[in-house]
Image (cartoon, rainbow over all chains, first blue to last red; front, side):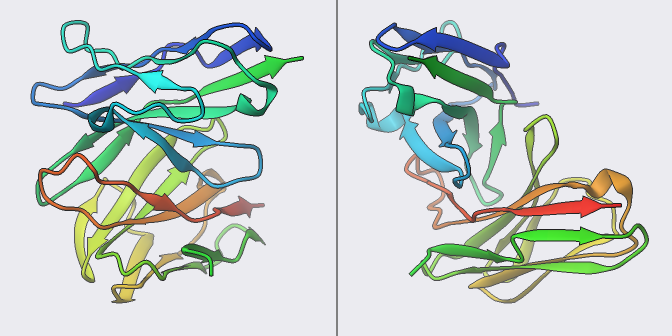
Length: 110
Length: 116
């Protein structure tokens, strides 16, 4: 069965420090991986997806199939990055659904 | 102008009551979802509907009954509410293409349900 693991429930860094939010997945097929973010009092929204290989708000995430990981990274954290981050695995086909990790609460201190 | 909207935003009720949460999307999407976010912020899918048809039911108690009058609406009705139903419920929608990696789900603002 598919599973998404985010080992860190809480992560606290100082402004300007690098940040890495870990995500590991377990799925035997070709994964579709996403990072969603929920800022305080806002709705959950897509941050980035592995297929696009894009950088959004300075964040990047590389799919490592060998390590079955999709870690989210940013070289210099900003206070406005403080939020709840969810890694998600999308399963395609007619019964498409997202399986979310338990989330990591990132706090960027001034 | 909101893409995915939910009502009410907050819902406080007594155990045993029946309540409904409404969701509407104006994005023209075919697929809609309900998620439950518990007190530990764990987000879990409950249901998905595609063009008014139930696609996914993730072993949710049958006290929960989704209803989709049309593809723009997916309402959640909960019978005989229990303390453990207290959570934030999120509606979402997407326009999936099978085997596409560009699927993005758009979430509503959430409904915080408190059962006393």
